[in-house]
View 1: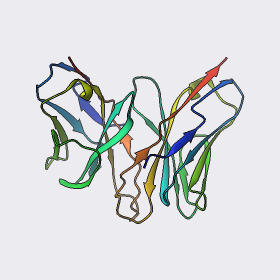
View 2: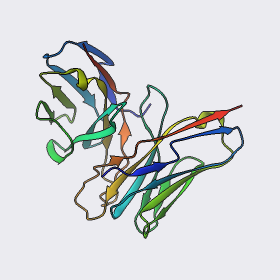
View 3: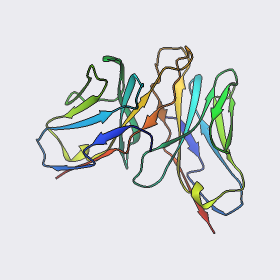
View 4: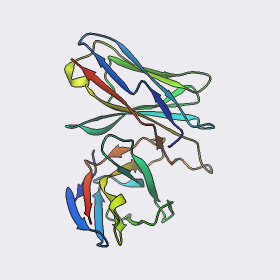
Length: 113
Length: 116
């Protein structure tokens, strides 16, 4: 079942903060976050693993609430380059999905000067 | 640039035809994933191969098939094409990390398929 992202869209001015949420009805092993610019490939941002391990490579943070099966992506002091569509991809708990991700519908983030 | 390559970049064809999309994973990556992205369905997982063998299957139609070759490149074959098959098709690759079962997937630039 597809995870639900909120909000569907958000408009910011440079320097403002935003939070994007991802909720699943299933127990999760991991949540993967990607950013996609129009017509381009999704770019990996971060993985949140059950048990609290967090991996990422940009100055963007995230959290994973295992009890609620929710993840949140925090973008602080937004830059113009943050504009794009953000997707969460979820991997169910149970160890048999082998990396098969189910993606949310996406959150469109627009940052204005 | 993720290191994953896909060809062709654009493909325009007619209903009922058959096409093949090609993907070369990043050097060293053993897993290849195929995704379909359309406006109404979002990003949908189709199928995964690991070192030449099918590992996971998603919402892939029977008209679609894929395989991974010994050199690890992969092909997605789409046959009896319908208008609704028009979409962006992405390939992603990953390498198993530290014994865990969750790997970072790196996406290729995609192939845009238009069925007329």
